Amino acid sequence: MRVVLSSRPFDPWQSVQAFQAGSLQRGSYGATAVFVGTMRDFNEGETVDSLYLQHYPGMTERELERILRDARARWAFLDAMIEHRVGGIDPGEPIVVVGVWSAHRKEAFEACRWIMEALKSRAPFWKKESGPGGERWVERNTPG
Image (cartoon, rainbow, N blue to C red):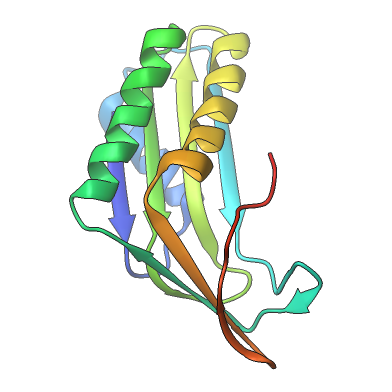
């Protein structure tokens, strides 16, 4: 399992492909579920020009690793990854990619969704949006 925090834009499909090629034996899995979250240019009815995603180095990675371990305890999957942006992010850029590989689709789908929902509610990230009205801290995540 792997957790990566990136301060630079990344291609989520290249990240998934690289993880799969480096961590999983070809033919060992029958399902791959992937979620990609992308920055919107709106939130709560307001235009958003940019986002700054703050985190606590070390603490954030540990919590994301804990989320992956918790998911593995619930579902029988082969491997999983999370790559998440931090710092400045522009609309249209990927913020997060979650990938789960398993023998069957049910485990991959369910674990991927659970990991993403746990990440949104448990991981120590703080979002500051900038728009025409200035800057504001986001008080809550959108519901899953």
